[in-house]
Amino acid sequence: MAGLLRGGLLPLILIAVGRRTMRETERFEAVRADPASARLDHTSLWEPWRRPYRATVLAVGLLTFFRHAAVAAAAFWWAYHAHQEAGMSVALSGLYLAVAGVLGAVGFVVAGRLMDRIGRRPAFVAYMLGTLALGTLLVQVSSPALMLPVLCAAISFGLGSVAMTSAFSAEPYPTYARSRAAAWCRNAFEVPGGIVGPLAVGLLGDHVSGPVGNIGDATSLAILALIASEILMGLLRRR
Image (tube, rainbow, N blue to C red; front, side, top):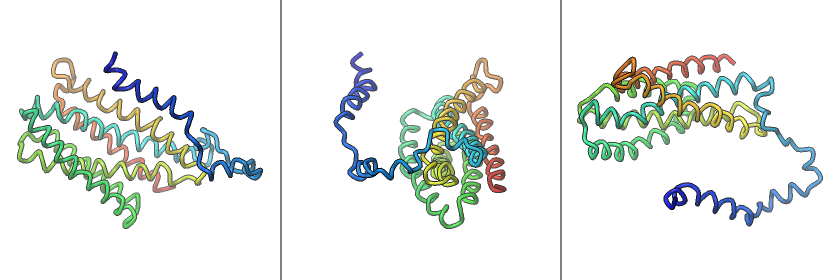
């Protein structure tokens, strides 16, 4: 019980109590007190699903779902593949993850600059192709010497794609609807994708009962979901 309190319940209790003493900003209070605020756009949660935006939020949401399903599957199962199927030690795989996590973060920074230089869609296509190729290679190689550079590059492309789908989830909509659209893409599509991807790999790749019988091969199949992201990007390009 003590562990549960420290790990999850205690922060929630502190937030529930502490929020009662939080004050709004002076700007918010001034706008709320102004009679003109009644004429502002107080958009509803369902605003992104109105006819002008419905197709876009659905396409961007599905794009986010497939991207996150593939990336989450590879991230979740790589350690198991490295230990059980590639024969790496826990210590070595942990070291590789630490190094790749730092170096891979460069991909997030580069992605932001690349989007502004060549455009959101071309950058996303390039990053998805890189993630597809490197993610597949990552769960097929077994050489420790080759595993580290591939892991660094795969994480770099995977993290960079997050920056791009974050832009897509907000930018196509008017300012007053952007936060709602981003929330829908995140909670209704991205989060379920992060559940479905790893679950599918576990069911397919189980060494005893899975139809594929190998986690690396099952993860490679899950990564093919990135092709669906490319198709959806093509649909968005026509809009």
